[in-house]
Image (cartoon, rainbow, N blue to C red; front, side, top):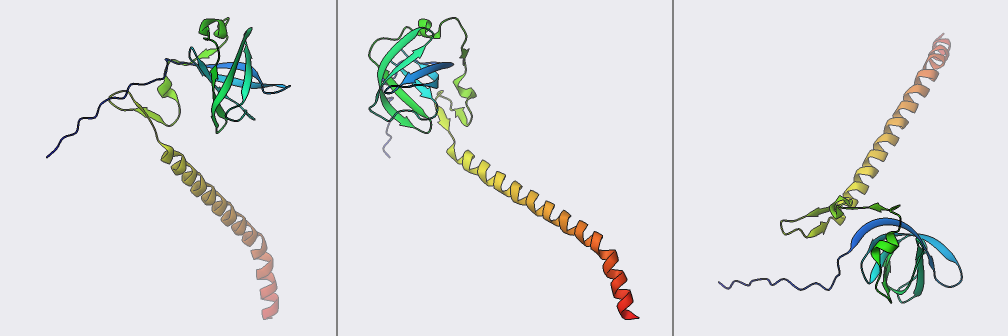
Length: 168
């Protein structure tokens, strides 16, 4: 039997600081609001509607800090931006008006294994949607039965009177 030892790959990711910080981006002429979700020395992750596509050059403005960079990835309401200069994280955060997230594992659908690596469970979203659909169908069926019973109760007495008159 041959045993293969798995070697850990060195990571290129820099340490990121998780936070929620309101900011604005400019992709062209207009500024639009976004949220900075995490920041490292050389990049930020943004969350918002109508984010620019991969490859776009943008400016980011928050707490008197202006950054310029290129969108490296984009999808599902988020994008990652590689900036030109080194980011002064403390200057970006500014006066402490941000909500700093100390535990990354507090994110929905995430848990950690023994080595501390994060795992996401996309099937839990699917399961949640199925449960939501089943509960909605159950509520609709219950309301339908309740309406049917109340209509039958309301029309039952007049129909009995008509039936008794017809039997005479």
